[in-house]
Length: 290
Image (cartoon, rainbow, N blue to C red; front, top):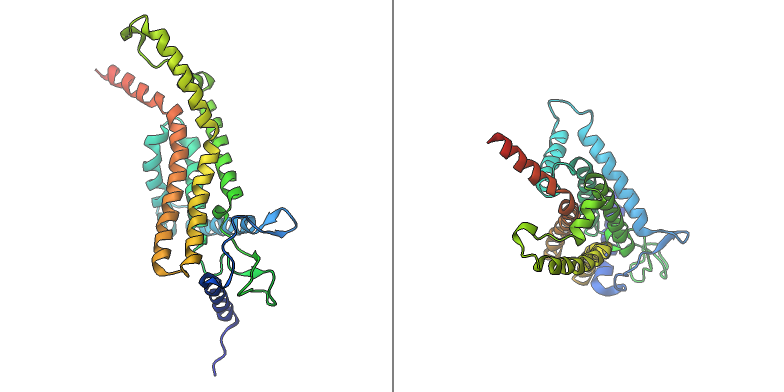
């Protein structure tokens, strides 16, 4: 009888473990990450580090040494960057785009691949805990691998990075005066507004500004909870439906949509403040041309 290679045995073991836990022999997916190394290095953190390292090495391998005549790998990466550039440039604006695009590109690629991590056999279902064997077919309490975006601390960290970058880019390309006016300023045209109405509108815009300030403050929470809820819900769906093909297809789509939504919202928040100048410059250029 032909001997099965050890790598094939391991792959079959991982797939069998995931199927057994998904079929209902194990507990439901835990909403929190599990410490693996000490108290502070969790399975989701470790997965995030490993997958990020693989992504960096893969991109370096694809691009290699950039050249004027691109290789197939370089062409793939350039096509992705060009497509995302055409998507984000009108939203962010020309001034802030050079600083915002690397961040947005990294967000999209990072979140997309981590969202799809939950689709691999063994993710979230292979580990150790109460059983006699390390792979824990029935009672697994410490999964080894867990998608970074299926744990709320991971998505909150991404949201805080997005919020911090938004503040830095806005301060650099718009400044505090533009930001404060955009939040609290009276947007009515004074020359076309009755004199008695303009002060009233100033009070109204001030109240609206307070509400807007609150909404800005909770952006990290809304960004993180939206991403976490969808990815964790998808992970639970896969386990609850025994990893059926239809659920796999659905989660591929959800992973792509959620990566796009998170990145687009980050771009929109920047563009709301920094994209005003492009219209003004365009109008001035058109006036000079005439």
